Length: 408
Ligand code: NIG
Ligand code: FE
Image (tube, rainbow, N blue to C red; front, side, top):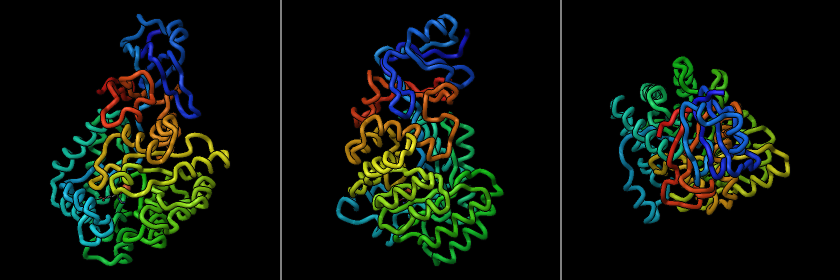
């Protein structure tokens, strides 16, 4: 049988959740999909090497699914590197935001940037993400906070998706911060009455997200925004329990959000409510690392998932790439998930792949290398997948394949 691509003799292949890890394995790709993953001897019998249009010798290398980064603010303009130093001198994230810095500074820069600049910026970020093994990424708006700029951000996200091999999924985050010159309730009313109908009409965003936290939006305001978005077919997502425990996780459960993200302050009851409602908890260890705060208790979430019999992958990790957490690498996020959140290396890798797909409500096998899944994969320049979190501070990914094509 002829096939498009045969990746043969990998020392290890991470097939998917449930710690399915094959040694001495090969992967077969046809029409952009995985058609077989299995022991090399068996694969060679069914798919002789000479019948493959392209072959990759992965001897001494591990193959993993491409990373699915389910939470980023990868589209921005300007530079906030000075805030890194200020935070190290003891300024908190909330203080910077309250002084009109943080998100507000990026809003100023994004409003002032041309469409071309924004597109160039995002395409450059996507190049870095791809080189580090990410093949699907969610990107949020939220640095416009006015209708025109929010729509422009979503348009740029859509165009970047068309132009770049990385799949880009758009999320509307109108309720990211209260604009400096506005009152919170008045702004929320505008998001609901003006922004959401226009965003729905534009047809680009799949998700509707809210920053529900101290210094941002209350649970009650967030509920209004998420329920209004759902009426337009936009699936809720939420920034929950990051800086303070507000009840945002419970709200995520109530509105049937795809995911609840951050969760640093979340309790056991929050974990139970999320799993009960089928909401995927997303952990962003890079943010805790960058802010030098405590990490979310992912171990507690894992234990609750096990007790409740939640199918793997119960949880996701994501990069949270943004000017406050300037880290594109999901490999580094997986290192932090291990060291900071005490996840086992394989759990971290599954959370970064199949977990990310779950946080985006994908049910097509994305984030796995199972038969029928999209052929999105990364070849690690080391003999085991564990090298990705283990070998930190460098990029362990050598080759990236998207939809069956070698793209890096
Ligand atoms: O997920 N928490 C809110 N949003 C981002 C930070 C955005 C920014 O500071 O520019 C986050 O961490
Ligand atoms: Fe965020």
